[in-house]
Length: 87
Image (cartoon, rainbow, N blue to C red; front, side, top):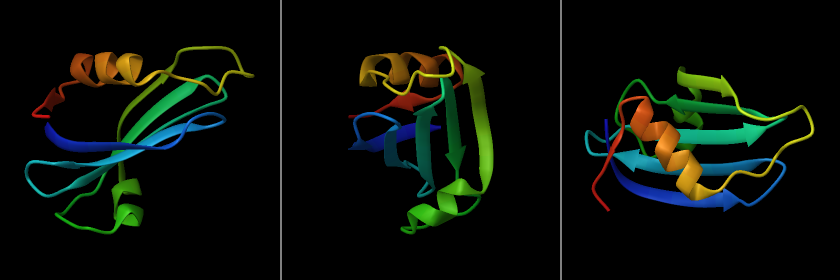
């Protein structure tokens, strides 16, 4: 899954990002309550709501009060789970 675009849409509580994959699908990443989830759309789309169709990654990284994640940590976790970046 090659990321060609990523935008942070909220900085804290939750930290969240949305972006596009090279194959046209969108992804949505969210860090809230210490849990990082990454979801992707099943089909190519420009509708970010469709990116909430399939969770491809989920991990408890912090405690239940944590809602701030750096973009560098997000990218590290995405790479660990099979994403690549073309930015």
